[in-house]
Image: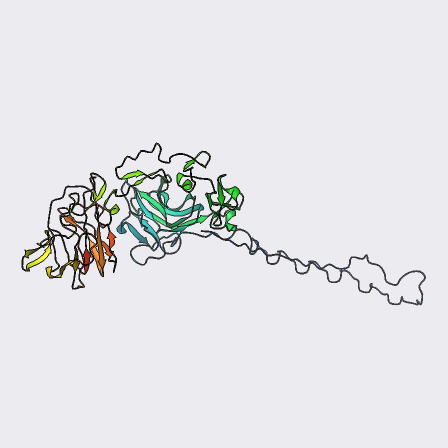
Length: 517
């Protein structure tokens, strides 16, 4: 965020009128007196065009007086710009309801009943705010979150009543609090607080009033002002890859950015995006030497590619990983897994014992018949006999024992293009209201579980689990019309029943293996 301030300065021009400064003399007079008689020609009791005062001059200078025109106590259109208060609704004048507008932000923990409008004796305007917290434990009353540019801020506010107050701010985290100031007066007292923002804050800044030990009239606040101090860089505009340095009021490249090669390290060059990048035939990691035959190792000391083995001395402690011969870094090995999210295709489950991807019917997968390969005819109460996947269609016994809601006639064995194995589950006859489809109940040891499945078709699916602890959080995901889409809906869920699903979906390879954590 860059701030611009324009100062306009006026030029005051004074035009001063001055008379002729030639010394006075009697015109056309001398010795002898030609053509003179009883009286002197063209001369009399006064000198022509001269008298007791200088023409066009008097006791004051024209266009000038006791004050300079267009000037007063301040210089017009020049000087320090008016201070801008960054606090919204600083006088608590706007109350759209029971709370003041632009206050009680996300970090506040005052209840709405402890924040009151005061309409008598406000410091300015007609309203103030009363904060009630008789407890010795402080509570926070804050502005609503907003963006703030970097800089130094000076704040003042008026307080009266009885209590203790201190200040802080929230940006990406809480700042250090100022010391408590005790207030015990019926008269308004001006208090001050200052803080510095080292960098711009986007959408999260909140000014904090921390209040405790209120009593009597409790603590009243009004006229909150915070003003940012002007800085030399306010007049400077830099590129996106630069920052302004206040000490010199000049733009300098950000870390890792550049204007010329000299702004980068010796082994780097400045590219067209003003970014320092590894120079040709130099390196910062082994991967930079992958295309250098015979020199696959990066010597970090010299940033030169040298002969050697990138994996020499590298030990991978997790069985799911192996050393990548190009990068020299332990990475997930082919066929290895941390969770089911790492397993795709014919091997959708992760065996936590070996950290290898396994088939859906592997014992590591706690979901029985997760690949929907096994189908048989089962009797369903009030529904009759139907062909359904084994171990699925948990019976719905009410709120305390929920199960499947969707009718068994909407479950079809799909064999045309299953993702894995020979079968998938297809929901047919679309409906508008979501209906549950669940597993039969089974016991699960406490722990963290990673879950995944594939889906395609048209519709929306949401998933959650149910156990003796109740329902998990609902998660919603769209289906992919033509291709099988991968979903990992339940990162950790001890449960007894399966996710809730919406019809006209096809589900192969349900995989919910125990992670072993």
